[in-house]
Length: 289
Image (cartoon, rainbow, N blue to C red):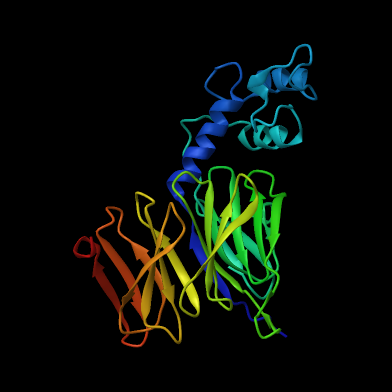
């Protein structure tokens, strides 16, 4: 019996991935030779296990910046070994596989799955990437994974919330987008009808913004001042959220249910998938200011 896979394919920030990989390679080139090789390994091995304040602690070897030269630093070093900052950098494709409860990773250079990077998450539906972490919006949990090791950095349960009537309302994590400084995540919760705001440094939720029903797709303006939320069935508008104060500013009628949206790099146009009319709708955001 074949398993039916419901998957969302997301190409995540290729420039950020390449920049982060190049930065890791440069950081692991301890002797400055232009390539991460055996002399660098000898330097790393000599400092492994030492922490800030220990005699002989070498801050260069603490690639993760956690104050100790430990296994996460070794993983970065191992992935950089044999490479040069001038080598072509890989671009990764993240696949949120809802039915298999995992996020698969494809190396676009080889077009092959990399099983060593697979992330285990319960019914994942949205992915966002910072320089160091992979964030996954799942139906009942918000996950943060270390990008290099694949280990979970933290999780935030999306437990059902109590209604005034005494019943329970499921929340249903759907999509996630990050602020420009990568310190804040905005997470749509489809069933609850709100946008959860997560402080990624404090590793905790700091606000829930009530919006119209079935929020799904989400994007952020280039300057980070506005967050735009698409709504699926039951609502025919776009919610506009203040990206700094985390409040609902307005709703923009669009005349159709929309589940996906994207903003142009200059912030002048918002693209919406109008599935009812089988077209991509374009909003001129300059006229909204």
